[in-house]
Length: 289
Image (cartoon, rainbow, N blue to C red; front, side):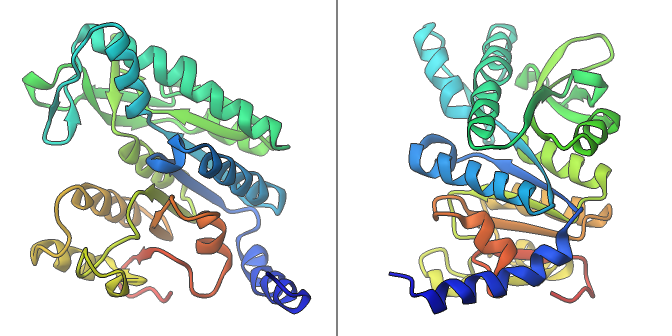
């Protein structure tokens, strides 16, 4: 149980970070267990509202894979994956758009508003925020990449004191909808906004030298070190696209990228407002932590 001295220590440790980041944009990719488990969901929402209340400008980007699978199952459609990406035919794309834009997005907006924040839910198609293009593989269907970003709508919402909640569905110039990886969307939006931080909530502790040993967590590394760990095979599997996403955003001007475990209570606040943090922070080569 926290003593009064503990509480004072927590608040005094947070103050310099609040002062440093006030008015700065933080883009958070929300997914994994923190999006499925009710207690964790409430804590993430609480953290985001706290950030907004102390002067940061959070933007939440979300996917919704498990709920998409639930609805595909209800409709008798078997989900298909290739290289970790959802194969998205025309029927599946309809379900993806319905679930991400119509259900998941609005649930997050409701929760933020109930917690005392002011949230607005949008998709990539709103205000031409994101223009998509095909991912490139003919057999992937309507899986897309980010072709272009126009941040006018986001800036208007942020300046109005709103917390934008962005679903990762966008369209190409013909109006065809595409499903885009939410990590990618978060990284591209962070870069376009010149964000202070890009934060990817995951179901892992961060970047580990040995995936079986939590004590081997890399708390701080730069782009060059991250690339070396990929080349050495230490960063592998599903962590490669996440780290690559972070590296791309940093190369485009984002100050810091974080990969952290969304399963830990209040992981966002612990990472941003404490000296030690809890996840892996990546910065541009030569930058200090």
